[in-house]
Image (tube, rainbow, N blue to C red; front, side, top):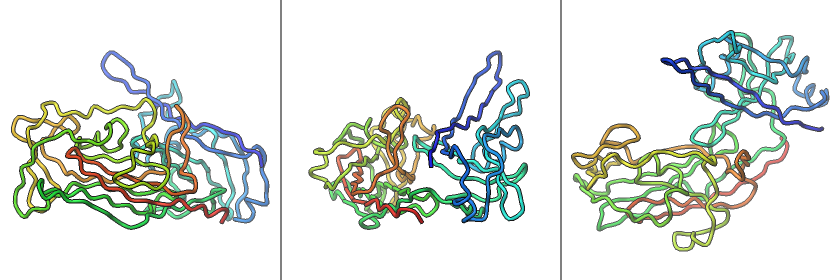
Length: 328
């Protein structure tokens, strides 16, 4: 079956003061040039029409189901709208069908969504509150970590760097990565700031969130002592950037006893959230890497290594494998 690449665009017009700003989100889907009943009838649904465009409140049904704010309706530009939507018939009822992709921290999240003019009927991969659509990708992958967690502790600092990996049960084919800096002492621990990164922070995900921890993914099997022999995969969308340096560099961090909550020294102000106190603990889901300015690829089958770092020079590594399950 031939496939073509089509783009769904949500156009947003934001009015503010004397200027008008234009923002657009693009979503990518693959649809067939011709309808084949062997695929659709196997699941009890048929495609009635293709290449439809839905507008206004109907488009907002999809946008808001993905935790995005729907823009104010603008009749001049017919915004918001979704293009390349299919109309399908399933169990005697008609639904719209679209593969909706949005970006979270430079990583695309894609779901097949069946919807009506007012509600979402189903969503695949399933998310809490919605049923699973009777559809499937041509090929599925499972990301399996070698173990659930690993860590290292510096007795001189009283800090532990912890890396946790888990298969994402919500987003199929994704991996949940958690990186934590934890005070291993049962008392307040004042630790001087440092710049002991073993790699450039520009190649790390997560560093922009705390300026204290980050991680990279390498194809192949590596450890804490030989990861530099590999090349980190591009986990951030090309051209994206974050302002991640504190407004006033701290002299030290004050960690709470046996915790991952830290406060910067007096006079410091953190530019990311405007507060000198933060959790040195972040979690996110990844599904692949960028191979070009507009090309994002899911992790192909194989073994990969996640390496976590902190500004004090601590490093931990753990593997995960990508297993292709083929057609289901």
